[in-house]
Length: 82
Image 1: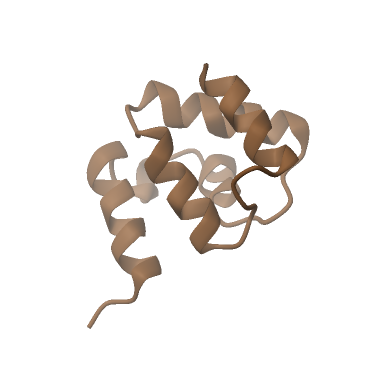
Image 2: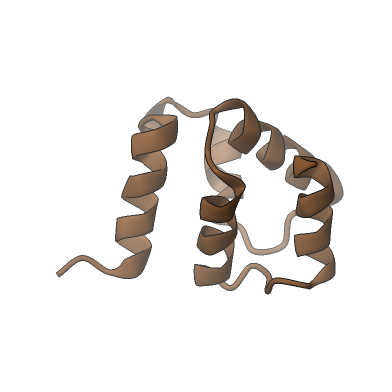
């Protein structure tokens, strides 16, 4: 039985494309807990341009314990996606 992390990661790749084709720093951003302001902007741009629903991205970040909904980092992503 695949883990929730594995399942969501493969779902993200089904939408965006294989992670092996992503720029290395973007792929790393999906696995890094504390991103800088600029790294969050780059990650949000990739999410938006590649058609990944922000809710799926939020689910990923919550699963990886990068942030919780309502936190400052979450609100920053919300502003970027608006």
